[in-house]
Every structure is written in structure tokens, then in C-alpha cells.
Length: 131
Image (cartoon, rainbow, N blue to C red):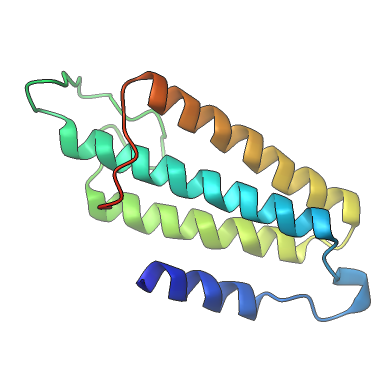
């Protein structure tokens, strides 16, 4: 619930203020899609952190591939970086004034995060909402 509040607050704060910065419908769709995939990446990575060391999952010290998180991050570190990534994604999109740049930004984040989620799911990680 706190996450939804933070996302709502960030999106309200970053709402476009001028006609030149007004978001087109495709920007809203792409921003929602990229945000969704960031959340899915967060959830599957949290599943990996929780399951690492259990009998069904064998982890090496370099399980996490994101250099910002480090080789074996805590759930707190993951939460902090994920919230920063979510707000940074929306802030970057809001700051881009040209239509094509905003479209390219959100499309690029969506493709990257889709690849990360696909990798996590193929590795056997699950969508467990207790993050």
C-alpha cells in the first residue's frame, strides 16, 4: 500500500506542466508498461534473495548480475534501489521534452526490464508478492 502511495505521489509531482511537455497516450502506456516490468523484476529478484541458500536453490556468491545491487544484496538494498529505479524512470520520462525522446526512453526501459524478468523466470524464480 505504501508503494502505491509513493508511486502516486511521484507521478503527481512529475505531472507535465506545459503543453510542450504534455504526455501523449503512448507515453502513458509505455510509462505504465516500463513501471510494471520494473516491479516484476523487483518481485522476482526478491524471490531469488529469499530462496538463496534453501535446498531447492543453489546460489553462488555472484548470483545477482546488477552491479548496483552487488553480488548478494539484502531485501532492504533491493527495495531502496527498486524504488529509486521506479521514480527515476518516471522522472526521466517527465524531464524529456521531445516526444520521440520520451517514447524511446520508456520503450528502452520496457525492453531492458522485459529481458530481465524473462531471464529471472527462466531461472526458476517466481512472482511472489511478499516483497
